[in-house]
Image (tube, rainbow, N blue to C red; front, side, top):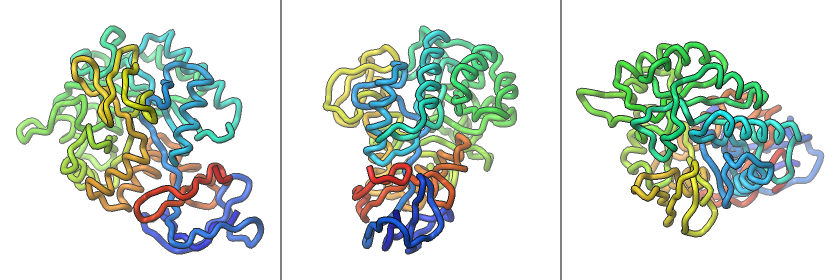
Length: 373
């Protein structure tokens, strides 16, 4: 397949008009062979990469079944999100083990027709603060447990790419130091002070989970996690741009403060793609109305928005420059979990995941592993 006439988003973060060739599921050298797709007037962007979301279409990744993964991966692909690293919730080890088994079996089955590639697992719990659980279940919060993490990683076949940690909790810094060479550690669901967060980054943590949410606010005399992350140039920050979690001005501030280090995420739950109603997240009842998903207490419980809609919101409503928003939803998340050798940009040899959009970011065509979806 050869796509002609499009403005192509390059790995350097700009657009240039050139042909894009795909062969055997990968981006390939220019060739006159094969079918041609006329994309004049459109932009060719990499398939989006979501490294933090929980479910869609009535299924949660934590259901731990082939059906759940298939439903979620199919929905994400249909929305232009072509590589996924779904998140677990705060559960006991036996529950997490079943999820790891299901994910490992799914990946072992090879590419699944019409489904986004499952490229990792985000372990959002249970090593978080009992005082900042958000929509996580407090009954299963526990201190960092190296043995538990290693057992789960083995069962998953190495799929855990992110592990969330509240660094102020006992044993957290030791855990971060022990695993930071093998997995991306993200500071999350935390009450950490500036000094405690700085110690976590010094120990090897390299990310912040859904910045601004489930952490102390930025204050000029107590800058906390946000200030500690801003102090370094090697820490990325997740950002939910769904129009609910973050004010547009705070979105713009984040992109300015963390230039080149923003990882847009959806944090979406099982209601995504469905009508308003009552759903579940981590075993807790969630009430969904529009983009807003809350527990009975009123606590925000994930989002009901997919990553492509978050991209649109960031550009259309929050006025984030298109190039920055695209970087944050493609190559930045791929780098965050170490899969940028195969995903996140339109480069020869990488998996041929590509989306054709117009200037309003409306989708015209999706190419998944080189085939039109």
